[in-house]
Amino acid sequence: MRADAVLVLCDADDDCPAVWGPSATAVVTARCSGGAVMVVREYEAWLLHSKIGATDARGRPVDSIRDARGALRSLIPGYKSTTHQAHLTRRIPIEGLRASSASFDKLVRTLARIFGVNAPPIR
Image (cartoon, rainbow, N blue to C red; front, side, top):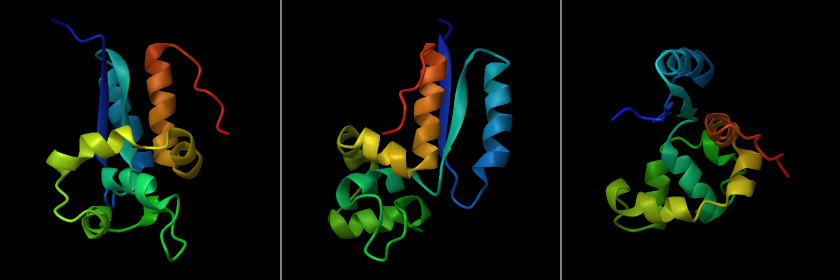
């Protein structure tokens, strides 16, 4: 069975999303509908937003926090991505995270494009 669309989502870590994202999107869209999004630093940064808000105690945006997975472990004893990510993902405050995270906004815009709709404006 052929897929209707493909979304590639991965952690940027220290890579530049502006370099990797367009080339990965070109590879995907040459074959089918879809796109590629790099999460700035790591996926757990998005999950941190639902726990601590847009910035940490030092005022750093969650996207800039190095080792967001470790930060989650300090907030959720025994944190394991395979056990906790689905639950935490459902709790992401979409509008708030989109307003504070360029990579999450990119995900929303990419999904809107794949589904053939306009992304809602950021509030």
